[in-house]
Image (cartoon, rainbow, N blue to C red; front, side, top):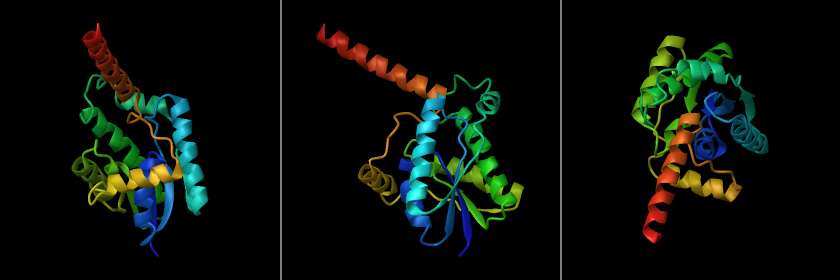
Length: 194
């Protein structure tokens, strides 16, 4: 069975993809997410992913939490909207590390769970993955995991496992955007009842 290194960002996004891929591959989990902020949030997502990997008997590896590297890479893109250029830089950084790790450890193929999210552009993520596959000389398994009810199924599996579900992508900019939108909604609601 071919060995696959799977980049994961959290257990809710990973659960469905893992169930699909373990039918065809010997899967190892790679948690490399220096974008996740604050560190407490990172730890919560990492610990849940590691716990699930242990529960189902998969190898779990953690990349370095180098938030300074991520902040440096995204410098100047702080005001980009979600799904903007900052996200591409973020995907590139995380996926390049995954491809490098897969190559160094002689995996046959690598993949990411990022395309499970309805908030992520699978075509852009897959283009980055395929470019990096050529650069590192290791096959990338692209996919749009949200298709064919993948996201709905992942959500159902996540609820059954009682996984923590975050309400923002992970970076401090997406967290700030989420809080701003929440604040604006509360203000609109308050204005209506006053």
